[in-house]
Length: 585
View 1 (cartoon, rainbow, N blue to C red):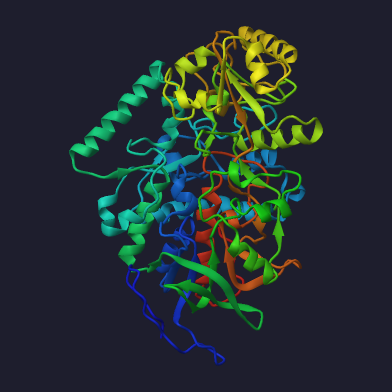
View 2: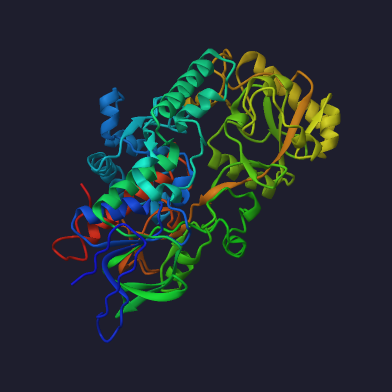
């Protein structure tokens, strides 16, 4: 007999276990982490399994809840509804030309795992809609490499979806346990952020007007709407609570319980004491990576030495669950990789992620020698990789410097500050440098002034022609999306010419690690010998990503997290009881 709880933090217990083991609680599937793993919990419950979710913090949502909440899903049903042509073969071509052929990549990005992701992604989307999650298409939020030279299969109009605004009143007291949305009090969808970052354009004004009207309308109706990752988590949490799935917050994962080589449960710390939870069908680890564990970063990331003070990952991203799995023989891969996102450090020490700022006209990024060394508007993971590569090859790239002129500062959002409104403390604290000449700015930044002047002069020539002869900035569809649509002929190129000039020190920040447990196409954790560890599944940033070392599109982190959680739940609930369910699709 299993123990089934309602969606509260109440604690029932059951003693029984097997082989003399005493259990405090018994369930079918234990999900560790409350981000993308919630989708696995929901799928398992829908298939008749008893499920428990354990979250170590007091908030539900993990990195997914803190994120934009976008999911990258090629060939999903929404695309057909809005008239975006796509296919499985087209998505495979995109994978192959961006991430590389599967045989040349990490086993995490094998042909079987790519196929499972692409096929099961559409199935998961339909399942979530049937469970009440409402989605919209992220129109214009292009695949990150669509239109880039040599890339096939990209979709300019976007393969990404995100949840519609969610009214947290539907959660009752659980609303207080959601992580706040990225957009704060605005009912702003993630895909709209690039448009409103150019507030002084027709597109920006029109989009911001729609956002404000939507926000005000919701408030007038008494709704407490959230968007972004908070909305996605809100919908899924509501469905879980409706199904009576218990979500235990402030419950830390301590260890796995293994009998005869099979994972049969876990040890958790709850209400100040350790409890043993039997999991008859398995344990799904979806507890994030190790961005906030400096010791692990130094051990595994020597070539790309990210630091805790640069990360924007969620506070619980400290790696304990990954360490436990490794202790029990789990294989890992790409442990040196992360979802890099160039960031500058604000006066309060908090990293500010730079995406659109790097793509807008009137900006360049240089190393300490005063040289540009990559396409500033490229996908943020590749931007971070370029910073590490330059540091290793030449030096002076950590930090690099993002330099903008006064046109940029007067027209575009920067670090959350509206156009033309630069907080005084940014400059007085030294977090942002300001000068009337490029020579003085170079001096403040410790950059070679002569080289910087030559770099700016060359770049301004490209701005005049609209062609970046050095790095092809503004050619890709996503680069154009992040640029200024009013700027012709290239929305990403404009001269750095009008004083005063501004600069911030840029570091390779991140939103989570990208390497971790090596899993198969069913979400099963593998040993170094390539064999599945019975009863152990994993998804999300605790795993080595199916995307390999590239960020293919908006939602390329959340996508694998929710899809492989879904896949793992289906495999764990295999009604035949087989250890080897057929590949999805």
